[in-house]
Amino acid sequence: MQLYNTLSAEERAIMIDDAGKQRLTLSFYAYAKIQDPKKFRDDLFIAWNTLDALGRIYVATEGINAQMSIPEENLEAFRATLEVYDFMKGIRLNEAVEHDDHSFLKLTIKVRDKIVADGLNDDTFDVTNIGVHLKAREFNEILDDPNTIVVDFRNHYESEVGHFKNAITPDVETFRESLPIINEQLQNHKEDKNLVMYCTGGIRCEKASAYFKHQGFKNVFQLEGGIINYAKQLKEEGLESKFIGKNFVFDNRLGERITEDIISQCHQCGKPCDNHTNCENDGCHLLFIQCDDCKAAMENCCSAECLDIIHMPLVDQVRMRAGKEVGNKVFRKGKSENLKFKHSGDLPNVALGAADKPADIRQKVKVKKVLLGKAEHYYVKAQVGQFTVENNELNSGDKILISGPTTGDQELVLDKIIVNGIETEIAVIGDKVTFEVPFRIRLSDKIYKILG
Image: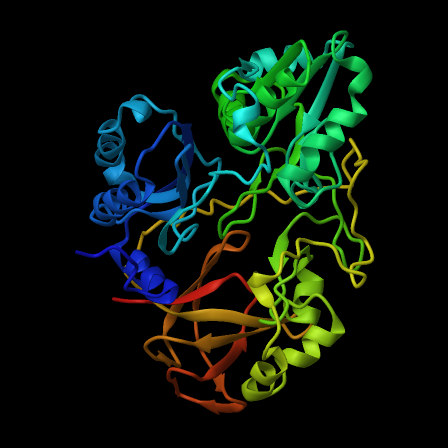
């Protein structure tokens, strides 16, 4: 009985591409009393693994918190696995604004003490006494009320790229930090103001609204389904968006666009930008905002130091990390003295720039293709791209597809390829390949060979 992943992320990505099935990215949560979280976790893994469901899920005695990717054709079967449990009958599934077949590449279900780390003692207040849920239209209306105070219960790296106009955006790295800060800041407005809160999908506000009602706030409201559901209702009802910018999400996309406004800057050069990246150095993995030009010049790194490190022999890189808490084991979300244009706390309500017309990032499988590898570098002046071949082989004369969230789907026929610095006819696994590319590519782009 399989209760764990047997495939790597890279292997799963290839399987997804070869299957040619469009996937949905969705999230949901539910507070409920679960007597045996371990058994609950194992039962879910068995049911979801058979449906090719992937994602990051936390379960605890207090409920479930899930962000997932599933084949579109398996949606109803997936719903049926939830309906088995009374507390998930009719549960709302927040579908992403922008779907990406590679948003999740593993099924990870973890048993935790809590489904959201809030630092609260739930025995000291009634966690079911929550604030009033507001749909998008109602939320817009209450924001226009001069007696409303709106609070963003997300973290600084989330609010920096997008938030509701005039919202309080705490300069915090964790949800638990924001609760006492906001409580202290709004002590004098417990009875005369509407305390209106929002977060990504609604789960943080469920607990926060109960906490603030316990603290004596009389008029507590929350955005139903969070920013994700708000964006969906905007489209369905043709409403004005009072949210500006991009909604940060916790999967491989790292964000989905709500409006065309760019309200943040590249942390390295200051150019209007709201694309997050993780530092390429495995000993760092700092999350920060980086524009395409800096991404190309810095090779996905946050600093000159990290750029030097990634060019060291792998054995030396591993030796440097020995005995240290590094990479994803260190909570470093966008704060470093190397980032000259980082902003948090009080944030602007005006755009610094406008996003390009968004590409459809859902993969449209129009032709039979096979994944070859990924982009490594783009030389802007020469209009030359460099790629690493990770699967199969590439030949001069092949028709290829370069695909990515911003690049879209672009096809080329290779007249000439340079392999490891030498012009030749064939590239195999492990080779570095360069060739002319008449359009800008990004490091998130993948390269495919078109078959037939």
